[in-house]
Amino acid sequence: MRDAEEQYLDEQDLDWETIVEWTSQVSPEPISVVYFVRCVVTGAIKIGFSEDILARFRDLQSGAPEPLELVHTISGGIQEERRLHRLFASERMHGEWFRAGGMCERLMRDLSAGLTGELVPGYLLTHPC
Image 1 (cartoon, rainbow, N blue to C red):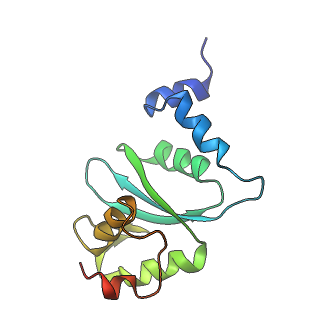
Image 2: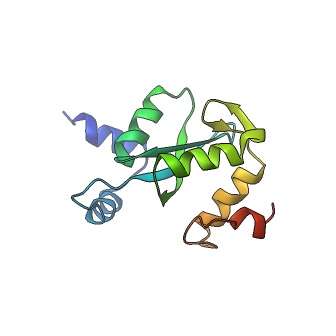
């Protein structure tokens, strides 16, 4: 019988090489990241932070009624997360979830495309959506 972790990887359509690549980049020290997770069905975007992004994503997915995808992470913690929440306040749907199609999605796409390596102060002022 397969264990729960193998079944989870299959459900998430992740292969072993991807997991090895991810884990080889993990520092023994906790690394806090701000993450962007998208609901595949609605396009809604969650902005949060975690020191264990894989465990956090697994928790989010297990509680979500629809499939989710981890779109991007940036270095940062609660201050960066709060800054983004304030910045996108007009796009907030509920809690830490933001509507698709706005500035939040634009930033997420730009980050994923490598258009900016860091979320620098003024990024959204110099890159209007």
